[in-house]
Image (cartoon, one colour):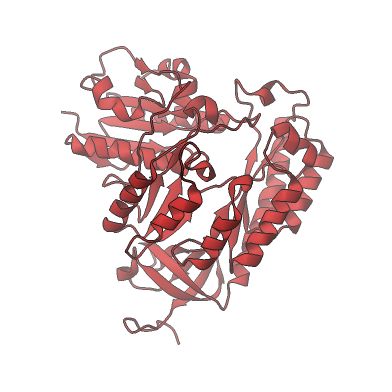
Length: 441
């Protein structure tokens, strides 16, 4: 009997939530979830199509899985499966390809996971898609942080992005359902819950709710937890959300706000919904309002027509902004997008050079932000014990922290005095409380 299932997620936090839900379906049907590094009878890949490298990684991982077990049943789902199912169906050893609408229906669509059958392809159009596939961390997920999908799809028309093609239009979980799912995660012991979606700030667009209203409901839930908002568009990060994050200790002091380019000309070519002046104003207001706030930034280099002057403008704009780190992407031509046929293509080596320069800037930004935390007290969620006995975790403002705190602090919100930097992390001591003893004097 096929009973061991390995799941692998590529891409965003939204995919992690969906993979966990798929895993729970296997658990409910009597299967055992094993680590992807182990040999399994069934492999499920939840894919990403944001970049060409993400698609390449998927193909490599499929081949690696089949080397472990040539008789394993291989299922590929997610955005790559939605957009180019025929390409995936041609890969030797792939047994099933499921689109965005079908990923949660694999037990009804696939009959017995029989590898002797031809490749099954179930991919329907996302046009007019209104269903919302509920997804969150489950028993199939061993993380101390949980992911809760509250929104899916996107109505934006950024010229470089395939996500609207892969996931359809913007839609959201009903507020009452979101609060119920959130309560379940809190009751299951998760101490950090990450609200995910394709465009989280668009939550509630088609109903009478919005992200601010939902956050106000979630922070009223009883329990010891904190809420982290995943990537949010700058035009959707409202003043009332900033105020709520500043006031509530239940909301992480951390935003990830995509910029994509600091060049006004390139930003217009990307069809983003803000300009650099508006972006800068948002960053400055957020930093002024929220103490110790960390801000991460997405940026794309090598977009068609990006001259050296545009790149320097982006670099200098980011250099002068009080942000904490960058997620740097080399532009990748995505079939079916307007940018893929634009003039002024930047060669691969130049994209790599620009990417490297911004990654160096990111490390400097992160180092400076971490150094500014020395002498402060931060609440940390410890996730695991390192091989040398050290504990590792992240603070509310997304600072990676290493400490000698004891193993009973795993999956616990613990206050730490930050004393220094070590190996790209902050180090610190446990703050003495009625229930603990300070580890260092």
